[in-house]
Image 1 (cartoon, rainbow, N blue to C red):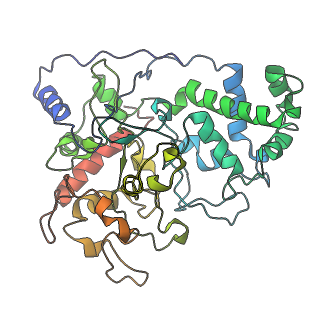
Image 2 (cartoon, rainbow, N blue to C red):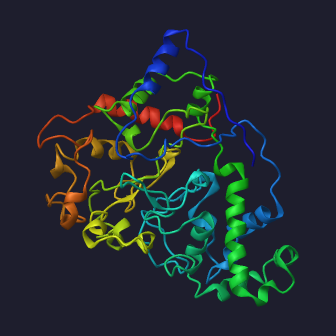
Image 3 (cartoon, rainbow, N blue to C red):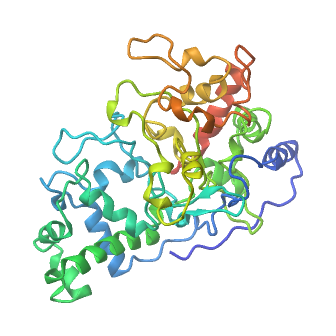
Length: 410
């Protein structure tokens, strides 16, 4: 797709306009260090998507084709439903594998807006940024696309040859040969690489993966107003002393008029409680165990400082998610916000053992408690202190987050 940029909003002339401008101007410094502004380099919400290239058309067919899994029961779309912002549409905390019983180790994230992500890197200030998957181990959309096919807890294919054998008898096999050569199926490694490139092309070209069609986008274009509650929520979201969400999830337009992505693509350790209902997620080390760090010559101490850190996801479409954080510990967005602001003031509410009794704080990775973010708002609260947001303010932030859902119509 070749979307155009939107000009920044004109100078506000009304009380509403001044409130909106004030909310958007609140400071955005924090968690991400010196990384990206979190704004898209392009927006493209009003431009008609160009016709998909032959490569992208193949990618769409591969994306929806369950026959490519070991048992023929799981496709990319099984866990990344286009009807639910390319995230799971069921209530499972972690998704079942192709065999119907294997349980994944992490929550399947939304695939929306990933086209603006970049390969993993360590910024000059030491901030880990970019990469695909929760731990950044894939360097591109194409590399990410390969993973589920060969993961025994997902599509469960033995190797590239097994995937290509299935592909060679798919209804669109002739189209694949027409694009990549009549002998492509005799070269399984080459064919599998082109499967990944086709999936990448589909994500890059189909505007469904980055529609910028939420109420908040319409608000930024000056096409609608936010309600009083939504405006209050935006101000609280941005405030460095209240929600401080924008520290990692920037909400402001870029200086070039690009729309915010609500992630700076950095990593953070939040001390998410152990999910007692999902043993497969217990003790996940996150970034420090990731192949993204291989070859960086990090010392043992430097690598251990990254344990418990996971990729900061985009908050676009967060209100339609049904499981939150890498381990799916929370399934309700209101509860997620409440955890953020009460984690340090009321830890016994959140850190529980298998019997429901109070457990040690940061109980999923207590050995790496020192890595958890405790200095920035809203976490910087003493035990028994006043949370950064009260119940009414939590409702306002929730109202704002609901404006980030794609597909809004007046």
